[in-house]
Length: 341
Image 1 (cartoon, rainbow, N blue to C red):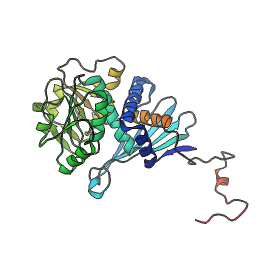
Image 2: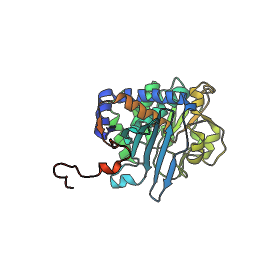
Image 3: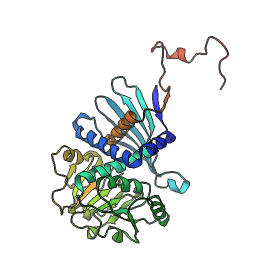
Image 4: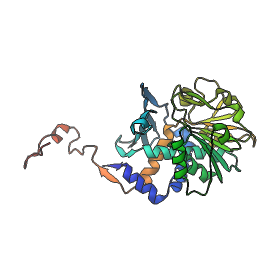
């Protein structure tokens, strides 16, 4: 039997557990996975690009379990009432190759993306971080706010989006949080005085949303939206000003802010394992060039499998009396009337 986690099941689970607790536990699970970096078989994700977007497969495995996520990125989808990103995940036992979990991963990816940003902030953002600037108030903005709020004592959120309705949506969703919400008229206004900046937009193009003039000493930046070839969010001149942290360098060189460049970077596992400091000084500007890595999905799916035990089990793998005789399983029963389809 394979455990199936659909959207309503995950919704109930998160509601019962509390979203802040889920984000905190996912951050811890992802940190534990990065601490075991050498135990994983890793590779860049496989991406197939189309005129309208991209469809990707993201595999990774340790000696016990294999995980793979199917995920798309279609920036034009919201115009047709569909989400930009939709995903499904599978978790299997390495020993048998049998799947043990099939899960929705659209919501889970949103959670693990924010949890990863918050985890990097745990290691790299200044301890006295109280002001968060959000550039883009789309699907990731609320998750970023709550996840980072688990790690740093946020008091003020400054936010900007080119779409006023997205800003209204964010303000409504965050209205009950104990935070000062400051809608801004420009990116420059939003980042002014911000200790931490999260940039998460969906436009599939090379952008220069954050420029060197907007930087100030001690800032930490989560660059979340640049996640495929030809798609960036930062002015290239920002990169030399920052200490750059990446998830998995071979993948980020293809599709992150550093794509096509030779900028020196630090892989995040080196920080988690104590081999490199997260912040060289209080005045350092740190940049997390986040593209999303399969290791984070592996951690999220394993965490979900261990904690969400009350889910539907389904027959996705035949339970054959003779594993060599699949043909017999498709023959009509020897008693009664065969079902009609």
